[in-house]
Image (tube, rainbow, N blue to C red; front, top):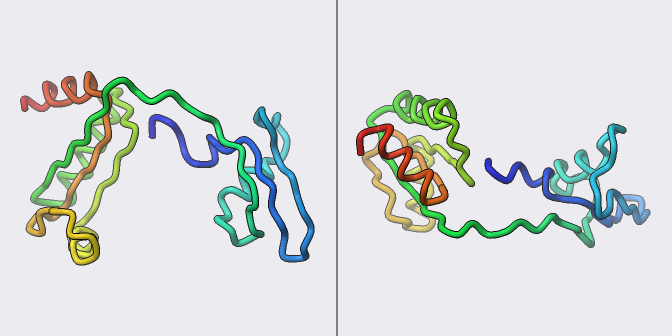
Length: 140
């Protein structure tokens, strides 16, 4: 979330269309207010052609970043936690909520140690100072 979607960080691509045409879109700077063909191609995830080269924006790594995993008894509580994070003005580097079927599917596949009994899990990636703020807001 903090760094935007993939399309926000792709500055240019070279791709081959289904007809064999080589297209070069974008460049070192984002396009102006015209039709966002680069965004369409990035969002198509390979359906409109084969990407052969990508130019991406490089961002500095934050000084300290922490992961936080929180389990909830209901999906509604997990959804409320997402709303609370956003309402508090906290912009995590990443935020993902999983319901119980997704938790179990992930556990079956990668055995990540997620609590199978949770109705929902919220996974957050935050800079350390934001994590302290969020915990203090919730009295943790």
